[in-house]
Length: 166
Image 1 (cartoon, rainbow, N blue to C red):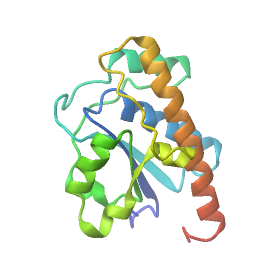
Image 2: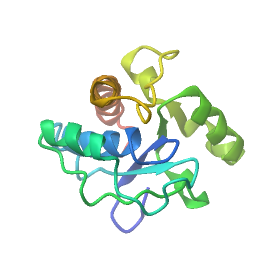
Image 3: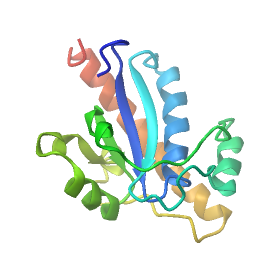
Image 4: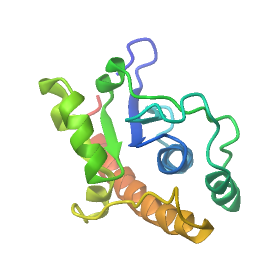
């Protein structure tokens, strides 16, 4: 939680931070706004690797985002930093990056590192990396991201209603 604003952060994680996690961030922003929770959470996205540090989102991610009236144009890829582990949740797209984050995370923050699809009731399912695929692969990954985030929002609403964020 950031003391100055009273908000908590949700950080979406993939490998290079140009395909899946930026899409997750912008969709989560929209979903939080629609759920009336945008003032309680800030979002970000990171990669576990610095392959694309400072680069824009993949053009195919930008296109998929635009199909849903989401704007990825301001995105600049970045690698996860130690301070990111203070987030309420680090929401990971696949098992490979889940293992990477678990190795990096301080022991007391391990419980905050979650596979995104667990929130969709599918804890073994990954959001596949569409980087080497076609536009339809990006659409498929985004469909899974939306399912995961929709489940995440429901979970956050339950936690909020139970007083967990007071």
